Amino acid sequence: IKGMDKMLKKIKDTKKINLLGLNEYPFLEKEQLVLNKTRRLKYHTNGMKFTVLNKEFEPIYSEVYYSIGGGFIMSEEEMIKRDQEKDHVPQEKIKIKYKYRSMADLQQICKETDKSIMQVVLENE
Image (tube, rainbow, N blue to C red; front, side, top):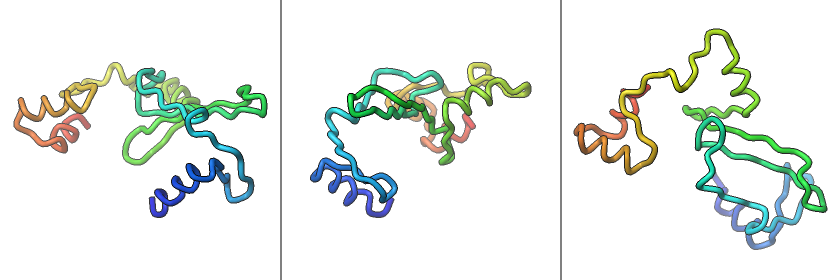
């Protein structure tokens, strides 16, 4: 995103974040941005949980969002609603030709099959 590096540097330098250009709030990155790389969210790992805290650092709102591919994002609520639809095929019932959980796994598949990452991903679509 154009200008993102400059914006992130400003947030880190000033320790403040500006929301919608309307209000500026204190932002302590080490305390308020938690990158939990070991906890898997309910639907898959490519997601983020946003939690809004009050002045006493108590949660007052929380929402989980997932990147579902192709540049699309869905909230957890939308994922639940989608899964409850009559004609929806649950993820665990979808047959995937090449299963992998990490980049190392994907690279191994590419090596074993003599295919590019793009070829493996397209065959899984």
